[in-house]
Amino acid sequence: MPFDAMRDFLRRESASGLLIIAAACLAMIAENTPLKWLYDALLDTPLGIRVGAFAIDKALLLWINDGLMAVFFFLVGLEIKREVLDGELSDPTRIALPAIAALGGMVVPAGFYIGFNHADPAAMTGWAIPMATDIAFALGILSLFGRRVPLALKLFLLTLAIIDDLGAIIIIALFYSGDISLVSLMVSALALMVLFLINRSGVTRIAPYILVGIVLWIAVLKSGVHATLSGVLLAFFIPLGSGDATRDSPLRQLEHTLHPYVAFLIMPLFAFANAGIPLAGLSPGSLLEPVPLGIIAGLFLGKQIGVLGFAWLAVRLRLGRLPEAVNWKQLYGVSVLCGIGFTMSLFISSLAAEEAGTLLIAQHRLGILVGTLASAVSGYLLLRCFLDREREAS
Image (cartoon, rainbow, N blue to C red; front, side, top):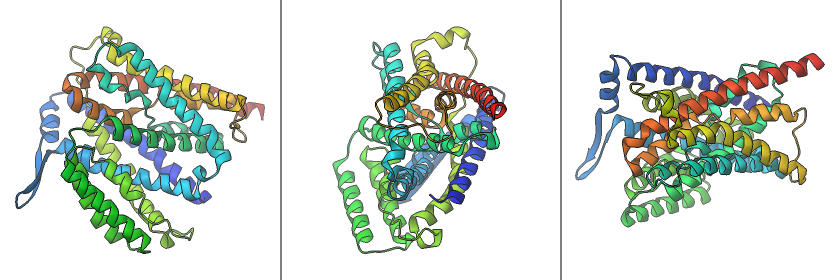
């Protein structure tokens, strides 16, 4: 990714993180004030599309989680493809350390959650909740330090989060699918075949891909596999092109066009729709129940232990090396920020609730909010201390 494009990307992600925080706070206010009835009624508003006997009828909340989040995952897929073909993920010497750190940041948090909830089959549906990192939120915190943050440290966090997103996509595909419809899967496969033929034919116009992509989304939605995966699959068929300029690359053009809408509309809207948690009846003891405690421990402890521990092991075994101008203290501060799961954790929570029912969703959200807040505050304080010391030393 060219430097100017990378800088613009980081700026947008940072600003989006702050907007997501505001949206989440607004949801909490709405859920715990007399506005609750309006908030709940808005999310329960039924919306439907009907063509003859074919119909899609969902509440607004599900349109956000299944529809708009498919656009988010489409953008994630575009970013992953570009990074693999022409970015940070195309250089094995740069990808090794964040890739291994990302693996630790998924395995160890899941282990914490499983350790607290292995005896409860219903609770175990949420084992993947603390594995996610919210890149927008984390970069939003990192942006508060301005130019004191080495660019290499931002790129490490960005690369780790992209790999983390890829891991989340695989987990959703493997573990959070419902009853499978073979007919819909066949339609999905046919749509993918058409996308492949369009791509191999050298078509660079975006419209044909989007039209087939809509068919793919509907088919995946009806198949029992989570609809957001259609966005990732579609992205992998969008041609990158040979030029560096946005106008010469359909993939870069789409990424450039979609990013502001995803960063400043879709993600804040998702946070507003999913972050509302009723505080009535909650007490400090609620945090000690296995589900929220497992999520909090996974996000706050598991992430920093997994990311930093696996990164140290990678350097020790000479599988990777520290980025230039980055030290272990700074890397530790970023590893704590990786415990900011928020939007991705909330999304996986919504999928877990589909399997286990909605009784656990309040506990999920409580754990996510507390774990995210602890990671955000601790990561900010640590980085403020470490970065200030580096500036004084220089």
